[in-house]
Image (tube, rainbow, N blue to C red; front, side):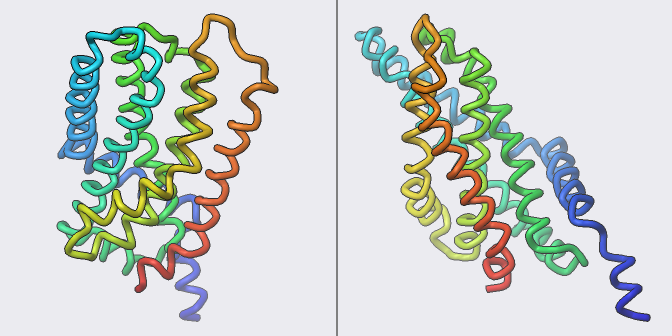
Length: 235
């Protein structure tokens, strides 16, 4: 009888994922600590890059794709660290572990919510980069690649952040672990975005290898998180 009651009380997997997402949205709406910090950091970074390369506008335009991804990675790392630090400070994460929900539902909910936060930041960055560097970052193909890359990066980031958040040196340890792990994603994603910076759109055959590598990275990171997140949070 007790087992049947526990099964009835335990929400479904996707219901738990949606609950985690709603919780993150409410926290962010009330505090605004994650997105606001990411936006301010990104804008300051882009302005610094723009002034540093202002003397050579041609070089700035050539480097704009790399600058965009560098800004996304740094701001994303900051957002990951801050988001899960809030969970630890308010003991929300401990409450989630006590709740009758699957650990991989917690993982996927965090991935979806932080991916959405980061993608909102990227929409702002796209406007800024179009104004500063006069490149077609607004193209739907570019936005799609940014979304795919962001999903894989956050999927890896939530896993790494959950491992490092309990350490004293988490602020230093997170970028040291996450940025090298993200290189297999960022390199093909940057190549794919760069291909759409020319007036003529590239053929699918010219970018399909890079896009497939991004998709493969996303699949690998999400699968790893779903299978191993239970061990990460219990250790």
